Image (cartoon, rainbow, N blue to C red):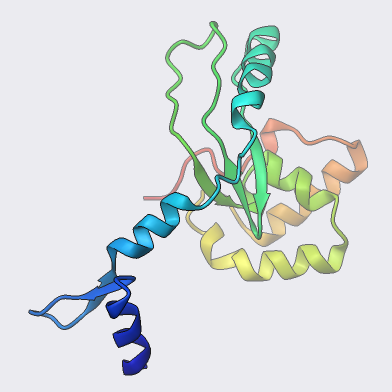
Length: 160
């Protein structure tokens, strides 16, 4: 492990705090992250569509994209009817904690849903009412109705 950390430090991917001897991410890793393509590479083209949807519906619109066991929530587009809604920027949430995530789960085989819920059970606890059982019920409802409802949202109020 020591040789690996020395190699990473030599390449400036990590640096060591002389006082604590702990390692932290280095400037080269930051530069590498900045050079990585955005997962929303077509966001400039999608923005007018999202804004148009918000204007036509009179509601707030989000662009949601699956990233592994999570949903990437893009900055939202507000309708004029909701001028006070804050644009929180991008965030990741476990698949079972958003309407978009429930919809994405509903399209998967049951075995994959169970695997995802098992892997995300600990992170789901940060959201009020978020349990694997609740997510399973919402997936069942979404499949039966061929849609999901905002009442199914598990992430309205993160726990403190």
